[in-house]
Image 1 (spheres, rainbow, N blue to C red):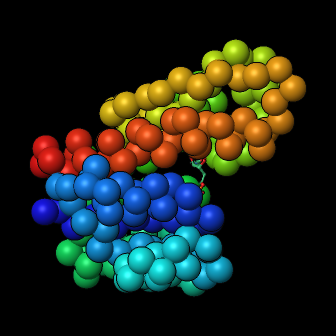
Image 2: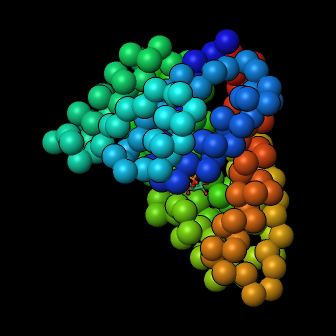
Length: 196
Ligand code: GAR
């Protein structure tokens, strides 16, 4: 059984999908041992507490330099004895102190079909706004390993979602979450936990 850390910054619907998958046995090779938030007021922390999962806050603003922040995050993960790290709407870039220690063991969920609409500056609603502006008819979500290049790591799985006429960024975000993110992220976590 692998120890999983879920890193969050916001509402935590992907965290909830992971908790639900654990409770229903779809994730069976790992256990969510802690949730670490980059923000004190993230609703994801309430979701974690409601499920009896330990929480911690490691905020970039509490450290003078990015390097100090990155070392603190790596230490927090090591203190929880973590095997697999899941970025579930975690909006802070990871540095090499975390990435090198957990190489091939960090999974991110991105709300588009990589290599479209990804990289620096593409997060949350901005991704869906860009997809609508470009006029794509299909978008989706990608679960991938995290490397030092933003959204450049090996792809674990993807799922396509239709863009509908009159979609707003919010409507598209909701459909991509429901049809793709909440489906493929738990699957990717089980794949990685069962294979390391
Ligand atoms: C999700 O749509 C996730 O894919 C996205 O942020 C949202 C977080 O929602 N992540 C990125 O854009 C990363 N580049 P949640 O807090 O409800 O899971």
